[in-house]
Image 1 (cartoon, one colour):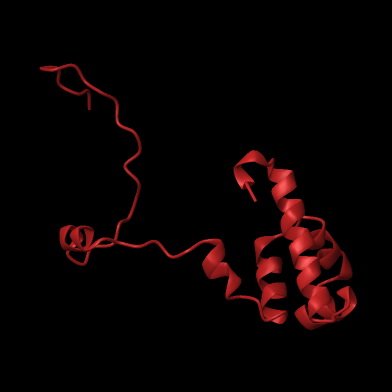
Image 2 (image 1 turned 180 degrees about the vertical axis):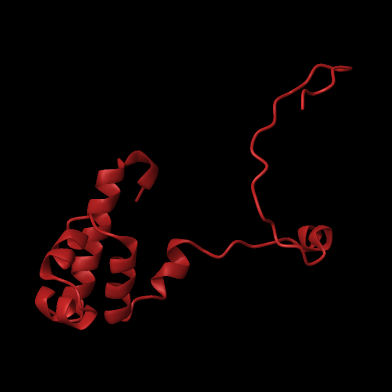
Length: 110
């Protein structure tokens, strides 16, 4: 599936469809999942409609025993050995952003 060709709403709807299919494979009603997660039925309905909060989605995935899917969803970043050597135990604190180009011989304004 080409997610880049889809709108954000379409991707949300696809996640909702997959969540509903997972719940049905586990043979659970929306109310059973809502009760187990301690949320309202409307929260489950919203998630299955492609809306809702990430914290609610995580709780439902935990209840449906599907948290391992998160590792495939957003894999942990891999760091090359060269980057590890450069960092020497330091963890990146912030992004540098895109820096403007200066003309040769021109000093940046700080």
